[in-house]
Image (cartoon, rainbow, N blue to C red; front, top):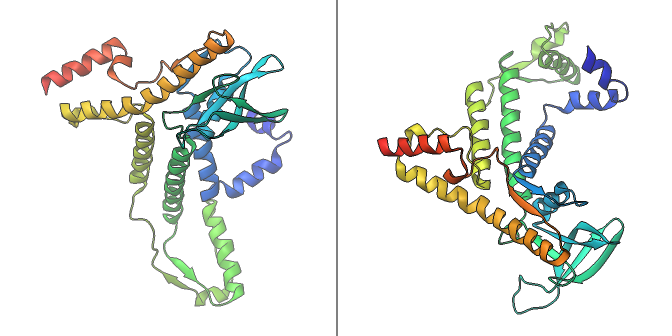
Length: 300
């Protein structure tokens, strides 16, 4: 097959490791952390940023809550950095220490450098990503457990190392979907205890995943495709819209202010807006959808 032949050129070792670890909590956490990070990266669209790639701006905003922008050798650059200095407010510092593999230095905010904030409190988004990646990873482990346990019931309790080895071989075959028999007569002494597995069904695990993703998007401020408005009353719809707008609008406003400050200081023409594919409020929806929702409210 094409894909197998293509990726086996130099990645056999990585694929073998992935196959061994793909059903573990660590592998699922890493997958969802990266997946959610990528989804957040696509929320906002930066335009006319020239030599500064939008992903460099968003990466710093998501990971540390702020991003410094200033020239390095006459080329605008997005920097990781830290506030420092003394002012009358604890959270407002006059200087910003930038760092990158080629340069580090301390600069005056608003004079030498513009600092763009992720939100009005400068909180990063990575903590939210970490939280939901953890929950989703636990859900995935539970789902795999449910699928595998359906092939056999009970927990084996062994008395000897020989029994332990035989049971591990048997369970390994079972996990891989292979039929196997235990030829070791010593297995006759193995006790089987009732399984203490999740009370969730496979379908409920999938529904839990969808609910977690919906909650993740709601915490950011984006309407989820899983939302079903037919069972909600007008007050609930309005409240949901308000909370969504409170989140994403704050993030957008901080980015717009940052782009404006960059333009004023460095004579650029940066702009930023929410990705048009996303819905974060009635005014951001296609006209037909917004009209349908208004009609639904009227009919309630």
